Image (tube, rainbow, N blue to C red; front, side, top):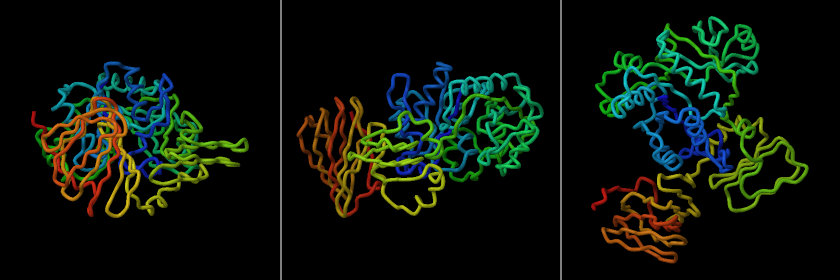
Length: 438
């Protein structure tokens, strides 16, 4: 299979664990086959490769998420990074051009596009295989997956098929309805539109060239900011007369809110927390190094991180976005390609950070103009390079990096460093990267 996974969006709906850097698909609340915690993106990749070990997976994502993807999946997948956010049609177009021009996927091959954040069983990706097989038959230009509804939902768009067969031509699409209208759709054997579709690569590239002036992937990348913000549904699907849908009747959940996430997370408690015997249908996720005690809580979710604390009735948690938008805080935790970055303390003129680098990884060679840094190694071994001079790092070592000095750290073993940043202007933009000269 050739699969494009769409991984975008910011982190408002699962606040405070998600933020503008760490979206919901990177939060580790599930467990793999060995009982280890895994994130949504790790679970999805594992399921795809269980169904098809030879699957070629490309993740279309933003710059802010690229480091987290590398952190959690390493080099297992290819990543197509958007220069800026332009909605789903430009993102899918860029990824399609990337597949053809950078990876060498044939224009005659089938490509499936899937969101990265549903909670599903492996049968879902077996259905994606059916989509690609159906595309190869050449009976329609676009093939969609339709989810068999379990109730008349107001949250999803609907696909009205011409028949109730497993594969059917599409009669029409319907926007999110009210409950009574949804009931009428279900009488017509309607399906939820899950945003999963497949096509021959040639179909989308030909369509794209008729709509956008570009020569290849690299040309499109540099023109990307000029593209119109438009969804794939509006740009392509609603204008395409030749569409068929494959029915999927297996388990499928959209875990976009804490209410839904609580239904599928591996444990009722993750982190330091205790619930008394009177608590019912309550989940706690605690990323802080202090305990939470819950007593008499019913139908609630409690989530705590360096970004904030949420205490909410589960049903109400789906309406938190406008309130979260009123909360302005700096991101306190981020996953990097080399490890993690956790803010321990921030005040005017200084910031204290715990930097954890995985064995064999290294940060970029960089400098800061407006701050100096003091590193204290608290565990592990590694090597520091400061203005071209190398120094072995051991537990207890302290290094001061003056403003303007080029520096980097490489980890021989897992390496933990407490980094104190000192300066009047401490921000993420004060960073220059350099090539490492061997």
